[in-house]
Length: 77
Image 1 (cartoon, rainbow, N blue to C red):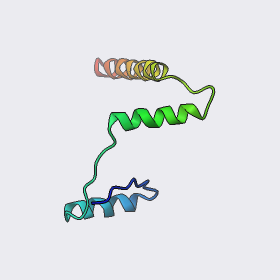
Image 2: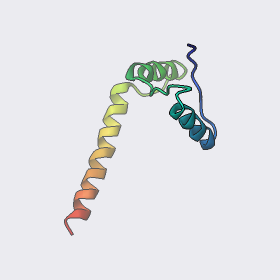
Image 3: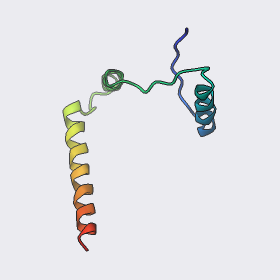
């Protein structure tokens, strides 16, 4: 068994890959958290001003809080 990473450039390729998975020709795995962390570390190493994981998490939480507030406000009318 060989393992490769594929970057999908065209949405049609995603359909083809999923069809191949249904035929048991390939197995598709989602990236693990450790690979995400590795990718973030790699991207940060290329930039002096890249945000830390803590800064990214803080920003995500702020956006989620705003979105949640909007949903609650819209749901109360």
